[in-house]
Image (cartoon, rainbow, N blue to C red):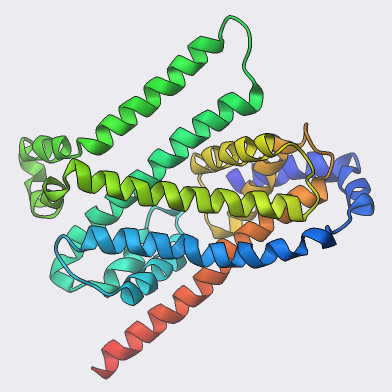
Amino acid sequence: MVFIATLYYLYIKVFKDGSLKDSVSDFEFNNRSFWLLIPVFILMLVNWSIEAGKWKMLISTFEEISFKRSFAAVWSGLTINNWVPNRMAEFAGRIIFINAGKRGKAIVSTFAGNMAQMMMTLIFGSLGLYLFYHFQGPYRWFIADILVLVNILFILFYFRMKWFVFLIKRIRFLHFLIKYIEILEHFSVAFLFRVVLLAMLRYLTYLSQYVMLLLLFGIDVDPGILYSGVALIFLIQTFIPSVMLTDIGVRGAVVLYVFEKVSPNLAGLLAAAYSIWFINLLIPSLFGALFILLKKKNKQLS
C-alpha cells in the first residue's frame, strides 16, 4: 500500500502535469561539481566503517572481534535488512559472525546501536523540521516545545536502558529474556555516550553525502536549506515502512515533498535521491551478499 501510494504521488508530481519532462529538458549535469562523486564514494566507506567500529565496540563487552569481521557483519546485516520492513532485521545478518552462544546478546547490542542512530535522526531531524519551515506565529514555541520534549524523552530512555532490564525482571513470563538483555546493565553512561558520538559522526557523514549529490545534480539553493531539508528527509523516511524495492518509491516521493517548493529541478532531486540509495545501500548490499555466501562456504568446509 505504501509503495502504491508513493508511486501515485510521484505520478501526480512528475508525470501528470509534465513537470518531469520540463525538468529533464532543462537538466544539466553539473560538470564542475563532478569531482564531488569522489568524496561521496569515500564517505560511503567512512559511513559504514564508523558503523562497523560502533558495532565492534558494542560487541566487545562480551566478545572480541576484528574490525574486518565487524565490517563484513555490518554489510551482511544490510543485505538481509533491505528486505524487511523498516529494516528491522539488521541483526540477522550480523549475528552469523558471532559465536552461537552469544548471538542473543549481539541482537540486544545491535538494538542499542540502532537506538543511538535513531536519536541522531530525531535530534537533527527535529532541528531540520524547525529550520526548514521557519515556523512563525503563536504556535511556534508550542511546536518547538513538543520537539524538545520528544527528544528529551528519547535521550532519557537511551541513557537509562537499565530500566528496561529492571522492568523485564519483574514480568515473570519474560524472564527468558533476562540472560540476553542483561548486557544492557554493562553499558555505562560514558560508554553509551561514546556510542552516541560515533552515531553522530556517521549521521553527519551521511548528511554530507546527500548534500553533495544534491549540489552535483544542480540543486542550487542555500546550504542551510539543503542541510535542514536533508535532515527532514531522513526523519520522514524513518517512519515510513518500506523494503528495498518499495524504498525506490518512498525516497523519490519524500525528496519531492520536501524540496519541490524550493527547487524546480525535479530530475536533479530524483537523481540525488536514487544515487544515495545506489551508493550507500545497493552497492554495500551486493558485497554483503558475497560476505554471507563466503561465510556459509567456510562453515561448510570446516
